[in-house]
Length: 311
Ligand SMILES: [Zn+2]
Image (tube, rainbow, N blue to C red):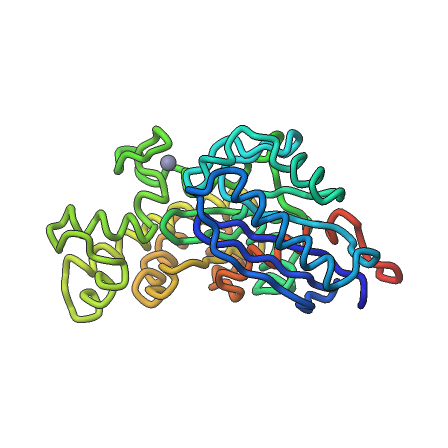
């Protein structure tokens, strides 16, 4: 077996782990359902078992490091999940130290959306750049910023919470305390909520709203116009802030790209001089829901620095 790292992507309902070599080849993998009702001990057991099994199958001597992506606000230095909607049982607990103790190995913790951005940079749509932003449009909106090939973490580890940047100052209220957050206008949940507000129907899925829009329904079409404009406002701000070459979108809402992308790109053009006058790209990510897993496995390689023999 070659030298390899282990990445683990922890979600609210399932967990994926994989052993990968430095070229991003998957050597072995595990996936299991996680049950938050089983509490902290159940979750920790699932995580530690998956990693221990991979280490056993690929050889402990060749293991270069372990990276774990978790949802929520992370205190990086302390290795603590400060706040997580999906994994309340793991909040305010020294999760990194406890996993390290059980595995007797060092672990690198990262926010899952930040890890997904790193995954896209390593093996996905961002392979040819060192600087990018990823927005994941799922039930919420997650964000990750890669600068100089590394996750931009902020002083505590909470940077890249792009779902909560304001796109409409008087927009829909958000659980974070703000109004008009990007996530309240561009997530699958937001699409369902807007359909209800416009009396299009109760509890319609984003997919159903999309199908109605394709069928010519005006209210449904207007919802994707809002999604596009909200994304455009956010992306123009990001383009103006970072001057990165690449901004990627991923997540389930991406299926409606043909409906929201035209108003989104028009809005970015309107609001960003540098977007209008440079070759800045806004594109679809390519790793789908595997991005977080790849990014978690990449964390030890980033920390280790360039491979021997590399420039
Ligand atoms: Zn918010």
